[in-house]
Length: 266
Image (cartoon, rainbow, N blue to C red):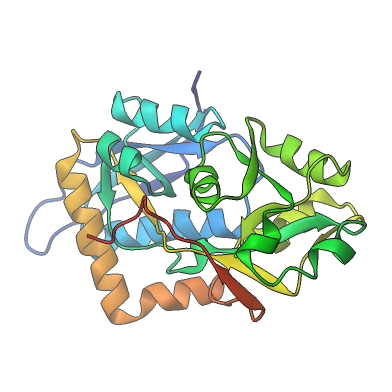
């Protein structure tokens, strides 16, 4: 069930040259009920900048949504929210309009492993995908990553609760928790558990992208976002914004490449 925030988070008003100010469109943006990280703040600012760049008049109201990704996307498809952001998959691109300009570049598909320090001596010896198959990962039950890992022959425990995945690693009931390079460090800080660490020796890598998704009834909004993001990318402002939030650093460890049959850039 979604709860409307009691305050308006952002109001954007634009006026085209020589024309009277247009009435702002009210846009409902999904907001997960969890702590915000820098990667989230980046997306909020990017959304505002993209609308400004496209000269699109909008009033943005954030709607608290269920933490399960699939439920949020279904709310998007039913018109309960107008916009959300997510890693893509074929199913998700059928539910809503994907704005196919990657918001994090290729970093969302570069996955470092969060492990318990007691597990590290065993897992640090891994040098190939086959060797990693001896260990068990945890991932969200409705995450595209779960299918990707399984497709590549890795053992995965699908979990419905975000915090439970960290707890299973901390309790040594699972071996590793793959998180993108833009997520892992801030999440470890938030966990504040000295037994958790990032494996520095290797990371997983697969092709994927993280997009804005727009309700299918909001075609004009989708077109504006694509226009705005394109302008930001061409001007270099998109990359500068990533750097502002520390979202441009690639892992320097060895990559173990996974195939992702569920992703196409076209």
